[in-house]
Image 1 (tube, helix red, strand yellow):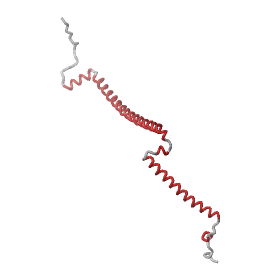
Image 2 (cartoon, helix red, strand yellow):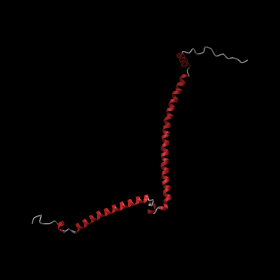
Image 3 (cartoon, one colour):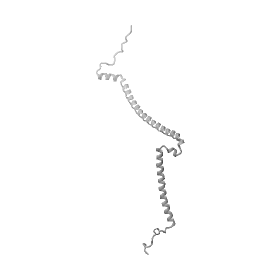
Image 4 (cartoon, one colour):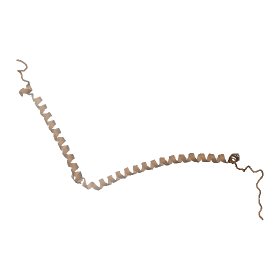
Length: 147
């Protein structure tokens, strides 16, 4: 006998019970997966349609909690809104802090210039540069008495 003449046990239909059980489990598993996928797909489509028809809460049997759901939604919206407002306030504070620093620098420069001009010799040299005839007084000012 050659190898071609002896049929394989699977081809001849003489499978062992373990092989048949394993194959039937594989086929059931494939069909079960298909059933689960079709059930899940049907559930998703059905839920989307119910949501568009505004029937979702009744189907889920939570219609009596509708006001609670609305209240929680409102709280979430308010929390998000408050966070956005806080972020905006913080951004404005940062801008103002930068402005204050610029004004402090500007004030320090002006203070330095005012102190520098406070010296009598500095004022006299500035007047001479401009060509003014004013100078430091030689004697004190005269006081005019009232009659």
